[in-house]
Length: 158
Image 1 (spheres, rainbow, N blue to C red):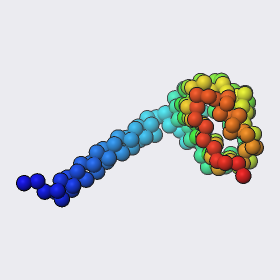
Image 2 (image 1 turned 90 degrees about the vertical axis):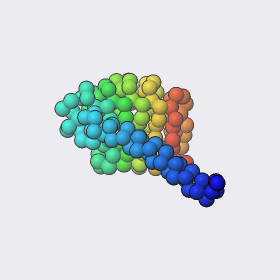
Image 3 (image 1 turned 90 degrees about the horizontal axis):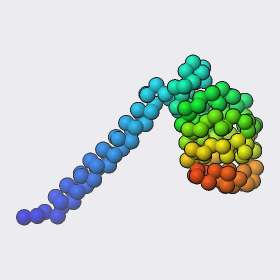
Image 4 (image 1 turned 30 degrees about the horizontal axis):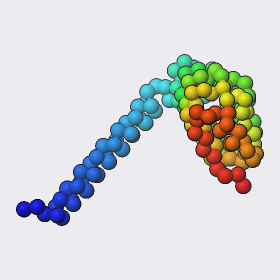
């Protein structure tokens, strides 16, 4: 005899198990990136082996100038630069980052203009994050036009 309550409980347990497996697989993928030896959150360590830098996270470093050494990391795939203090980003050098897929410039409040011509050279870019910025009006739109292959996520300008 079929019990509707028992069937519901079993379905719920099965759903939880499948969801947990998917989440665990995603966490493993993130952990593999972070512990692959190619993830850096320190410029000094990254500069020692520039060819090994695939993921660079300089979030919350309070950097006042954009580190030009970033352009020596030619295998870079993800570049996370949120919440620093630079007022400008160089237009030159971006073409060297031919493998860059993710660029996060969120929370850089002093940054009011993007180097559109430089960023347009990022042909592999899939995601440009510009949230929590005080960019001049239209900068995100200019970036989206210059990078038609990328998803540009920006906060509404106030």
